[in-house]
Length: 93
Image 1 (tube, rainbow, N blue to C red):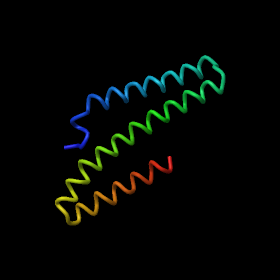
Image 2: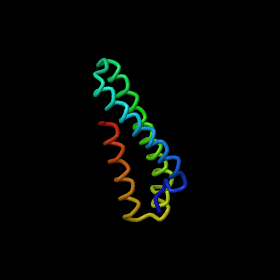
Image 3: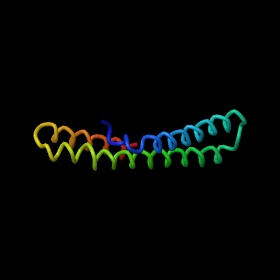
Image 4: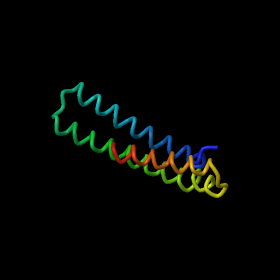
């Protein structure tokens, strides 16, 4: 079971809001809106995705990674490495 299952509806609601932001960006470009206004909205959408990602990462660490660590062994090592790689990707983005 995924670590976010308990909050799945909340996550989907947030993602739908972000999807709406992206559609709004498309409309802004179609309507030839001012570049800086578009960039401001891109920044807002980016922050929304980053916030969502950090929340999901927190759930993964406190759920999946902790559970694997309690069991120990190769699965624990793999989960920690996987989380570290995900964090590195988020930091680079």
